[in-house]
Image (cartoon, rainbow over all chains, first blue to last red; front, side, top):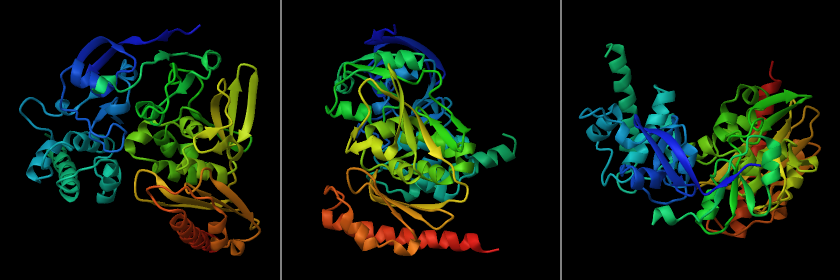
Length: 167
Length: 274
């Protein structure tokens, strides 16, 4: 007989650090990251998988942390916006967002960055159309989308350039 | 506060289909990607005692071909189906539709079985599956039955699945010479109206209009010229909501049926050229 649990232990790698915690099964990954681990870079807005603000990567796949159970991340690798930079060195996507003024209030930015990372990890040379299509589930309410799309394309170019010079 | 938003529930993680089926009841519901179930729970619309997690159950995933049809495991995600080589080769229309479901996060998480069992009226997937004559296998403690997707969908958010039944797979007949198109009109996360139109080699045509009403509506014609878009628009039963009134949705239906006919005609025209 399979047993029912209202709490479970999760063993999860978040941005390279291992965490083993016992959590209520109803706890969302967003709450786990923000409240238990103090990783408040992941923001929450709609709570219904529509706006993309809470996007994080679980084993490389983009998910809405607002409606993803923390227990489902057991034995997985989670990457949040805090996992992008290496120390003081920003990720090419972050550099491109800064250089291209692709953020204003910044609330949607972690979600856009993670969504864009999911795309570039599987498709390093996307067309503009592919970027637009991939990001269509993320909402920005102040900057507008053109600078964001431009920044993702610029980041893809700079990552390819870095590869070409053997960096 | 956010941690309190989902109601309390228990989680079970069976590892076999038999174990999973034994656990199911009115209050113990199948759970996979959660892209619809967890949202409904958060909104207070559903309050199950327990979720029966299907993600660790053996034999519920993958795509297989046998006896002229492709079987898609219930827990296959939209993203997996969209990129599967068998689906892309044998059922390109299914791959195309799955590639456009929701957003990239929903596609990475949501399963085809969950999509069907939730019976969201504004589904891309149900429209194309009804058009293709797909069916589902339902396993219960006493056996297994097969139901066409058309019969499976009983209404908005309502299927003929019994509480102790588990949808284990979706079967889609493969007809290599069939040609089809899928069009939708969409302003938000889900289509306002969608149309799947298929032509058999012998000339018969199957038309399905979805998203406007509670369930997709199918019609068959002897010839593409017989499709009367205005007649179809009059026959659908639209649900008025924030995406439009009944009258507006009838109008959109007629427009998209006409466009589907034109598109299919173009596809068939290309195909007959040497």
